[in-house]
Image (cartoon, rainbow, N blue to C red):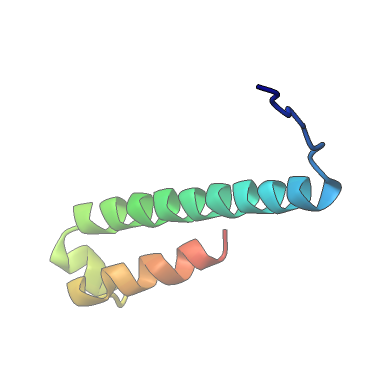
Length: 71
């Protein structure tokens, strides 16, 4: 019985797709980490401190998401 073993080189297009995917995953991970950090920091503030800077507790997640988009 004969078998055929054939290997195909990875083309530049496939390599660039994987590189773009890796960069996208890294960016999303960085944004998620930044959002979590901001949420933790703002949640640690007292209600009075949040009121002083014009933020309500309900808006913390939205503010963190907006700030994370700038990463």
